[in-house]
Length: 286
Length: 127
Ligand SMILES: C[S@@+](CC[C@H](N)C(=O)[O-])C[C@H]1O[C@@H](n2cnc3c(N)ncnc32)[C@H](O)[C@@H]1O
Ligand SMILES: [Zn+2]
View 1: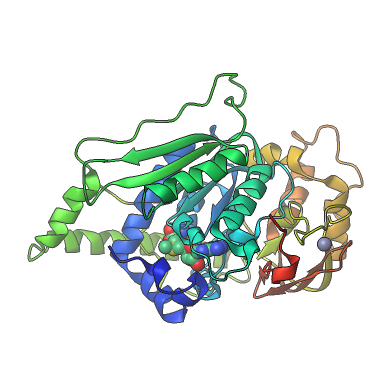
View 2: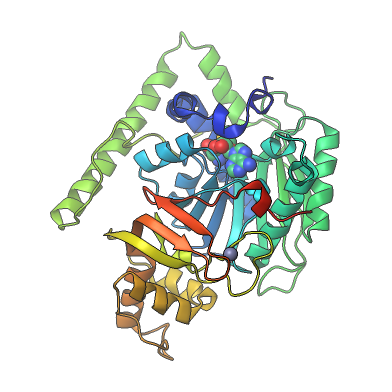
């Protein structure tokens, strides 16, 4: 597997071209959406809309799933080009240009939960030799200030691509030291393609209002749905998968255009222009 | 898009700046109003997190004087109040300008609605 984090610092790697490519790739949209859905499931929020943090929000592929669920969110990312694409795509969350390795300044208890999709492995590479920018120092600032900004009884769920066991140990060690409890949930551990790592961290021991201890959820096993999909795609002289997808696209797009039109007629001033991003696919259907 | 809901959560995170570092002061702010769906349930849930005085003061800096000095006791059932709160928290977007730390005077520039929270190496907390 190729590792972008070995190639260049994130704000360089995700430059204008890569940011556009990353975001418009439908396969990638699909995967990020699926992983965000799973992260939300692991977050197991109490019913109702929540205030969430999307760490390494990029161009908003993960954040727009939060929109769909009716949550309000703040997204932080270090790559200006990714944030620019997020602006073009009119995501709902408030966006910050921020290096998570420098830590957060949010007030204590600001968020009801946090998600981070495909980001954490980036934090383990040092870009300079200065002691304040060692991976350990950056992880420590990150987890300590994150812990403080989460409300008691809440969770943070990170899907990430660990390079090796040492890296997992390093990350978990720092997170526990920062005050979190929890651990690693591995989905489809026996499948090469579908295996996914979710670091699930808890703030405070008990579930809000329930007085019972937080428990680490089980990883998924058995036949991953993603793989069936994968198979269909690779056997892809078979055009059905494609067609289905297009049709879904159009339906979503129609719905959004209708909604925008409605807003315009209600006299809402700056309804965004319909862009090529309008109505992109969001939720995996499989 | 800095909205007051997020601004109300945000303190300065420069190394050593840990008192009187909230709320950040708006300067040269250009705002845009964008309507969004009213959700009373969200507002009621979020209300306890608010620093009320900071919110009222910051809203005034942006030219909105609709919020009372102290929130009504029946805040969770007072629809007129909740609607005003909805507008202030979620519909006022600061597009350009800056946020300045009242303590260390660090300037967080806002461009196209995105505040630059990046710190110089010497401003990053040591570990
Ligand atoms: C694979 S993308 C994922 C984006 C988004 N979460 C999604 O699901 O599409 C990884 C993102 O992490 C961001 N990132 C990497 N290191 C970061 C750091 N130190 N601080 C903030 N963001 C960072 C990158 O800029 C990039 O946008
Ligand atoms: Zn300061």
